Length: 157
Image 1: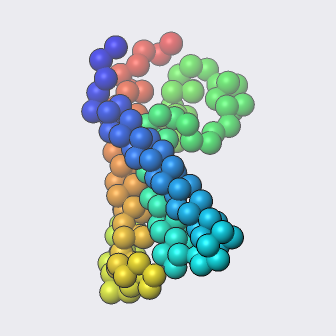
Image 2 (image 1 turned 120 degrees about the vertical axis):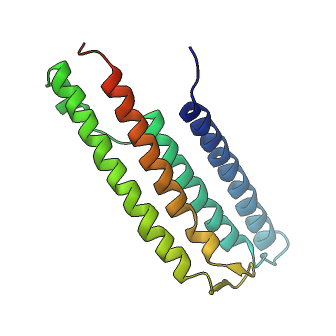
């Protein structure tokens, strides 16, 4: 089976998300070690862990649109005809694309507004904490549109 661009992009997002989770676990482990063994918690660990979590959650959420591991209720889908199920899934992806565009637009506005604020313990712009919102929104919209394209190409069965 030939893997497309969306498959490859999703794989990269999942791997980056997993790496972020592992890195966050290491940072929190260092914080616990510092607090209870060294009796001196690193000042940067909490904000670093939070920043990593924001990034890996949004990256994984974007990948979930393509991989279809987002939350859904299959009871309604199973009660529909194949054509009805196809229409429902297209409608759902249209809705996800709209939300992705909302994340893109308003997330970019939010990131721009906080760009001058600094995360004190890290010394970097708060922009880096909000940048994954528009990035993931763009990817969610693109993945949803790609899923719609896949559904339209499917047969009625």
